[in-house]
Length: 254
Image (tube, rainbow, N blue to C red; front, side):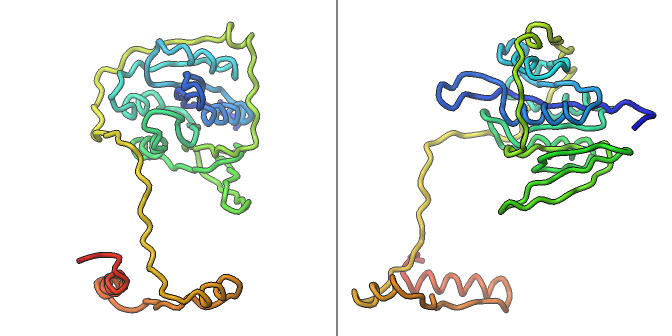
């Protein structure tokens, strides 16, 4: 890494306080910002959205890096203008997902596809050397693994990353924030979102026709659940076996 300066971009969004709903820095993005600070190099904080959002200034309190804001109107696709600005960066760090809005967690993947870059998700830690990043990746049940990726790359940080962002009022009042020129053209989002009340899913469970004694015995002893394991046959035959089971237990009426 001696022949060139490592350039890191940290993408940040607007979070929401879970109690009051007030705007604030997104905790997941703060973890990405702290990981960038540990990695060293030249760090740039980048946000696409409303440049007049007051909560953006709080990001300056967690890092000495400058904050750049791409003015993108609500409802517009932020991937094209972000991709244009991110040219030339060696590492692009993001949180796993936002705390508000669509919160789909798809932004790093959409950027990776647009830029043609590899992506590593669930990152807990990273080290950069010789044009490569070695990432400690989160796995279920407390397991971890080491992944090596050649730069440039996109890294999505896991919410359980062992990092502690530290707030500094001095950094907040002395930090630099700049609003970039508006993108020449923006693309409307292709997906129309519809909001409706959440509904509890209906669990299909076959009724057990057992006597009271049999049910009590089953509660204190371990017994085979029975059933049929279908491993052979075509997808159509397997689907027919599932339909036959549902019909025999009157879980469906067709």
